[in-house]
Length: 377
Image (cartoon, rainbow, N blue to C red):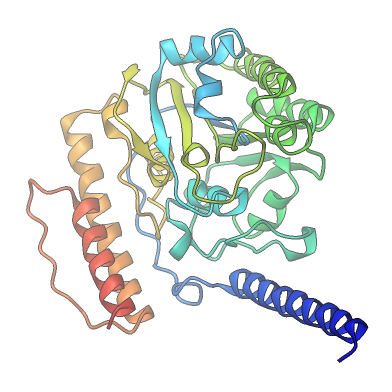
């Protein structure tokens, strides 16, 4: 065979391999986008309200992609560290995939990505945002008659369209100028009759993706500007009556980016300060613990698909209140298990939780055992 024919065959073989790899990759991505929770058509039924309001309002400040180590730099984020010294704080842990969409769904529903029915990957555009199918803290607040507001990236509008949000500002922007608009929209709400407000600050994530990553000086500059916006938000509040929660959704690797299982992308800061909060440094928490904690502060039902425990150790609660919350968690977890078992075609199980057991740990261990049995049968 002539040498040029070998060359042509080699080129054709490379093209065939490239085409096969492309088809395999796009098929994998399509499969990931198509994933649905086993509960997406039959979510658990929300329970009763868990208690009474412990605060005038909860302001939830989500600083996108803020790494835990960056959050501790007092020269970069001095105000956040002032709040840390005044409030309750811990290191928070999330799970893969370390993208914003699954993390936001986890933060607001209290459920991990395998059952919260959020998209495993970020939406490719605004027309492909998946609306929540599982209960969340905004829907719970709406059922209780509380008023809510959201200011942040445009995905939130589509995600929360059925959650009863009363006021919203949404932007496709991600930089400092967009964050200025987000905060300007939210500031009037802080002194008005809203009980749950989410403010999403995005420029740290923007710096990670577009300005060199966390080792570039522009990352710290974005974090400092975010800290200044946080100060502006808190100065409009009375921390004797209001509660602020500051956290992130994921980190970023040193060169910028996230989505995988790199340890630095799965550790986030958590700071809570104000009414109802018992200050101090606490052991590590899980991302699913945030939603039930907000529910306790606002006296709403625990989100029905919640897998978190609620951070009662950080709250000023009486023993009677703690027992009431424990009972509410036990009921919610039982309803979740009752919905989950038929959803994965698993037989019913009898689970007895003793008074000295953590109901969340007991029910979640049972769910994990059943899930693994179904996977490896």
